[in-house]
Image (cartoon, rainbow over the protein chains, first blue to last red):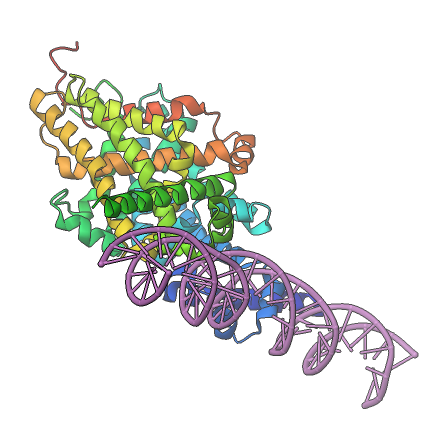
Length: 227
Length: 227
DNA sequence: CGTAGATTATGACCGAAAGTCAGAAACCCG
DNA sequence: CGGGTTTCTGACTTTCGGTCATAATCTACG
């Protein structure tokens, strides 16, 4: 009875092809100006068919976001293979997040686009939402894990609450990378840079920020290894 | 020739009344589901008239955001009246931002809603955009000023670049407060809290984050005043 | 094979909402 | 008062997300 399996496979492929087409359309111009008709044409399907595979335009965007988050989660997972101290792990996680934002700007941008309350409210019920949220949690879980490692090996002060600090690191870095995108991509930047408010170097902005965050994690007494 | 003045005044008042009505509508439900027809009815004007005063729905939202940013800027300005060390000023600025988010959740929410690239791109040309952006810059300018004060009075390490660090603090805190909103307001929170990922106390999340950021600003040697 | 029944695809259609504009109303001034 | 200017109106246009009756395609079974 291989027919059911083949059909299932075909359905999955079509679904993927639709997401591919959607990516092309969403990423070609501004996300918010893309239309379902464009995506249908790009996918060489009728609009109605799109709705057989995805409940709404937002669902489709969520599927794209999910691809991105999966990539990121994969990148972060590798860090733990290396044998490092906890604080070092945290630094690497931060750097990788930044790397991800730079090497997959489209996915990253899609994530930022989805990250607002109105949007979440809209999709809150859907299956896609659940999937994507779980993957997001997975990322925070990596941070918790790295913190706990550091608290044991002494590279991170033991009096922190990793379940709180993980969120703080995640949120703080998010804000920074989001700002980085804003400064990098659009005309907002140019106008701000004209003023002398900041003569900043975009390449050091995020790395330096990570170092700043790490300061708060170091044990109060200097480590035996250092100094 | 007081007629021109009176007309000007009347125009300004009508403009304000429209923003008032828009606030009521935008804040009553989700921002993105509000319609211009609703706002017109709330303002007791025809839709066409709205467009005599504001170029688009987004322009209207920008005007609301501007009110919020003005309030925030006012709050921050007061801090400098108090006579404090630079590091202390920075802490106060951070706390006030958080206070603002809590005491004016609607304005704050509107700001978050606008803070994405697509949105900015859409309104980039308008007069409102320029106004709002300038007020936003004003806020960063306060942070720069506080940092410079601290670098002089010795409460902040002298080897930082205030034009970079100001942006980092602003961006980082932004991310944190944004996350705070997400966790506070909607169902996203409940589901995340069910998992044991974080047993966090929302009231300490942001304050503790501020302390964490401050760690990176302190001079490496302990201050004479402390210790 | 052939055909009934299920599955999948289509695109004309619908409703909602942003934005427009020709004409009406209100107002100003000589 | 009457002509001109400013302000306002709401019906209309357009665009787009989403629907659904119908068509095309495929599967299973006699």
